[in-house]
Image (cartoon, rainbow, N blue to C red):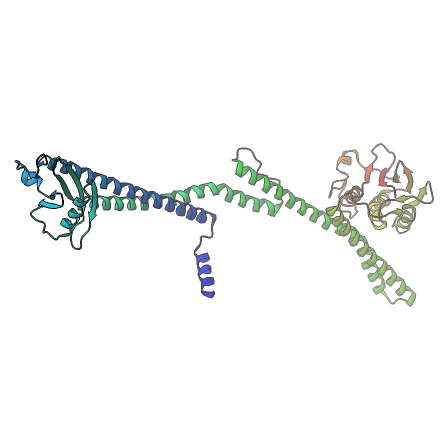
Length: 464
């Protein structure tokens, strides 16, 4: 058993590792099998053809000898002719079973004579091949000569050595031709397969390069054979998925960085404040509470964004839970850092307005809008909430300068800012994140360019 396993492993190691080598080996094996069959059939047909030629030669010679045998009388007589010596070469003449003449060079008990005796005894057309030890092969055929009173038989023999030599020459020639054809088949197959696989190798290298940088380049299906077109379409789909994954990864990384900046800054500020000079126990507890609250906020942000990304990937239409938006808005405005001159208010048409969204996700959607409003407002930030036709609409309005008209089209594009030198540390990710999270639960975030003065953002969420 172990020996068989070693043999199998050895054969596997000897097998070609490339598709080009394997296809070439398959073509070589198939061609070798086909040529072997053709060679065997060709040589068998040639052997039979040469044997028929020898038999025809023997029948012609027997017919010539038969003209010298007289069977018209009561006894068989052999007539003398001018070419008698030529006709007697390898010829046996029988009267019944009695031998009348035989070749001068052949003994009575020789294999050829014994074979001639057996053929003459059959008294019908028959042939046989004699291969005696130390002698050349010979072919013998009998030709009966019926008469009125006596029956004679003529047996002729022919040396098969020239025919065997011709057959051997044909066999050798066919084997040489087979070897040349197999060599050409292997070389041409490797060349053809190599040329056929060259576009595949090129496409593989290009796909590797494009996937590494998230390129927009694609193969397409035009001007390609059907097989390469299908391969190109598959690679294009794979490149699209890779590019989408890379884009989502970059987006998620940017969003986490953007969302975690505020609580992380608060933790650092609380630690710097606490280290600046000795603090009382009450101040220390207050700093600890602030740090714990910021850390919990960071944890909530991470959980919210990661869960949203996971749920959106598995089922984009999932709507998680239900939340009363009024307490969430009150809490967000209470914790909103605003200049002293800016006032914030919440206006709700009903004490309870349920939206079909988790509280943490609602905070992540509304927080960037509130942060932008507090950043640019001159004196007032107003948040209103009301129910409209199966949805909850939240409006965030400020009395600041508003969004520049030329920047409205880029407002929700990640990484874009209307004025990167305005002194604020925003990364241009808050509004795109708010819109993406709202759309993930079937909602929307929009900007009203017709509102003046200031800016008005509207959040539409499914009702709970």
